[in-house]
Length: 256
Length: 256
Image (cartoon, rainbow over all chains, first blue to last red; front, side, top):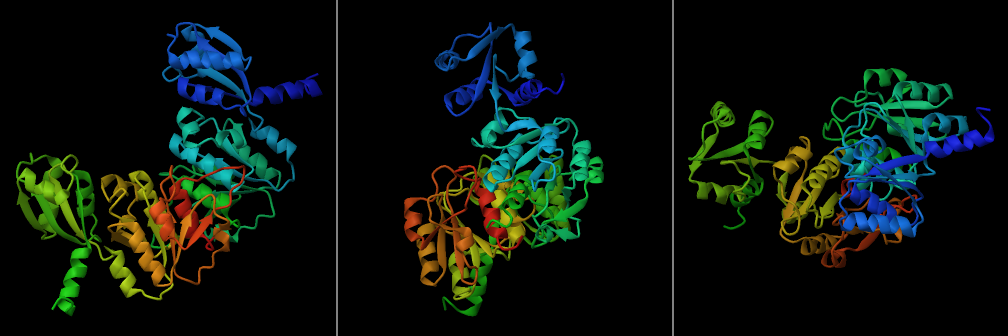
């Protein structure tokens, strides 16, 4: 049965897997006892330096399964040959999942989400995660197309908050936003040209705030999927804010 | 007479001079017709490439005084031999001045200022300026000791807002903050350990918000000069925010 409780549980588990890579990020993740780890992947060709020894020791200590691969096999796991340094780690993050599943489970709820469109700078992605987490947003929709993905730089820039934040994956943003709008959510694209401001927004209804690329703003396809357009009112004829700052202002609105 | 109107006017003018350097930043400044420029400084040894030719042409177009120097003389102007690329430019910014002078002229007013303590990352300084400008803060106190200074990286990160923002120089922060406190201003150090939150703050009184170093927070000497301590309430046990994000939340509070 494709939607037996057992199957759904298994799928939810696999959806929660996030593979990180690189010696330093993997070591830091293993050193955090609160992080649920699933499996460690190592290249057989790794020279045993201090970091690798420490990673292996920690894996043993935590009774973690280790899979050994040739370089090619490890690349398939990390999906980043150039930066994986022969090491990858599957995390089983309860807050990491699929936007589609989240929507099914929260239909009609008053969720407040961010959605990212064309955010390609890992530093900004990390800062957005940090701000949204601190501001208490319910989650961040992160499409696989057109956005930076979770990598060591993002983890570093999130300063430990990535693992506390609900990250909702989807393939493309526009169809996902349409599904949320169909559920009755306000889908608000941030734009300096909008008439309405963030202050005009009441938060008693499910809302998805869509943040666009810093230079080009929200893409056309994404804008077409938005039900509202909002701006942040600015002084001194300033035209735009850093996207992570915008994320923070949204996340902390009505809370300061 | 040391405080004759003529002398004070002259001093105010010299206080408003900001020297920037580097070929690209100088060229960008010259291309902005709204920027009041004062004097261009060039090293005699400069090879005449496309950028230098364009800089000289723009200076001629604007009837700008050019001073020629040997390498050593130019270094004394730019105060950054390694990065000046043989080019420096004095801007005469009406919003650039001294904290002391600002205080004299705004005694008892309801000013809202940021003050920076140990902000060493130019990227963050530029983002702070951008956020404070957009949020309508009255100015930013920038001490010469312990903080990044205005340089090409900061100008770039401020995305054109540096020249619209009141930057108030001082030598050391602590004595300056004491002078503001003496004038009756609330001087609020941001600290995650504070009992009061930003929301507890009424804005009907002059306030200086002091932002500390990202890793170490507000220094001891600076904390001793603060009259209040404030925190931004955070969810998910997040301990800190990026300092530019904090600056934005302060600058936009009560405005969203």
